Image 1 (cartoon, rainbow, N blue to C red):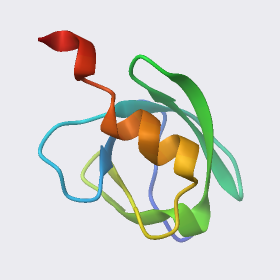
Image 2: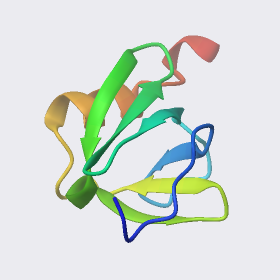
Image 3: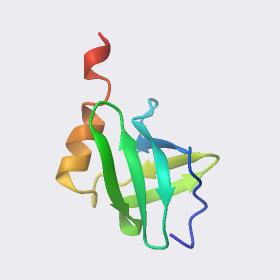
Amino acid sequence: MQALRVSVGDHVFLDHADEEVGAVRQVAKDHLIVYIENAGDFVVRGNHVKSAHDGKVILDPETAEPALLDAARRAHESED
C-alpha cells in the first residue's frame, strides 16, 4: 500500500465503473479495510487494487477475492 495514495474515506469502485461500491475504512501497510455497501467490511490486499487517485480506489476484478467482487457487484441491488 506504500506506493498507492489511499486515505480513510476514499471512495471504492469496481474496475472503472461510474458508481461507487463503498469506502475505505482503514489503511494499513499491506492492505485496506473497505466497507462495501449492503455487505460489510472486507480486507483488500495491495495487489487487488488496480489504481488509486483523486480520492478513488479502483479494485482489480482480475485479482480481487470472489466474495469481495460479488459484494461489490451487488452493492446497489436494493436501491430500486
